[in-house]
Length: 369
Image (cartoon, rainbow, N blue to C red; front, side):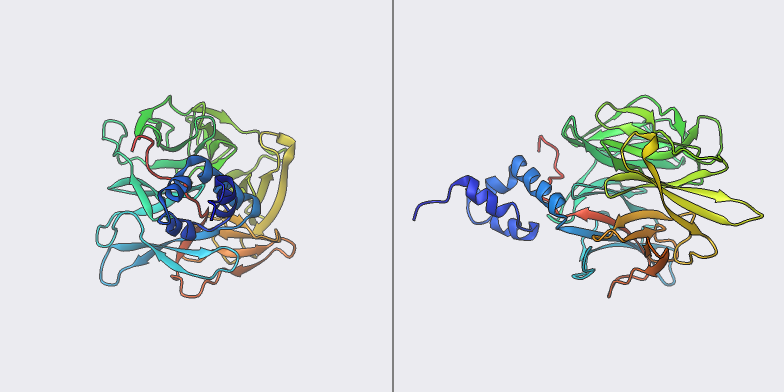
């Protein structure tokens, strides 16, 4: 029997899930080589995004240990559409009994970035069960005991995955490149992060984004800024056009590929509420659109001041909101009715934060490995 042409095999294989492809690497050396090929990896990833399949939620769980001050950190995955097939994942960094904080702080093209207070940072592909531990930063690079701001994303120009770590003052900006497997310091950020906002960078349009303030002006989140991962330059993002400026920005996120941000408005004589704005066209001031209005009195599902966007439902009629696992589970918000419903996942922990990732074959190993 004549062998199938490579392009026919590629057409068949690139639509299959990662689990099957991992097994098929054992079929032959040529299949193993094909499935590992960077072009095939990108083809598979593009197909997943285009068809909106292979999408999962990762649950980042923190469990209090009885009679112990330490927490246990665990990770689970579940299919985003069905909320079925719950599976515990072998999370990077052992956390039981260490007393150190750990969290998943970024998701991009199937890779997750995990921070551990003592051990450092790891890049992790939960679909291929592979993990790469980043070189640790020495105390000379980053001043300890200062709150660290983190972010993870993809440099489109350099075809590279990058992790950003800086102090909340905007100083000591360190950028890790997966291509070179090394950290380097870039110029300081001209903005600072309000200490009240424990936010991780939101990746959109080739940049990581945060809510910040002008240096030495503590207004509590008066502007939105980004770091272009290709140019490694900071820039301010145009703000929504509003009548009154009596508010601060809160958590920034991504919804359907578009940058989004909550803004809070507190009036002692009226009520506390937050509004979700979505930037339909990146960089265009006029494209900001008000999508959600949540009142603290009416919205009981998450703490509105910690609320962040996780994802939009496949039908687009609901968005999943989270408050980083503080006290409560994530909740669905019905956009038309503005009503909420707790995210129920049978067998899942009682307290977790959620993040979306796509199952992919993207390698976590540096290029020279």
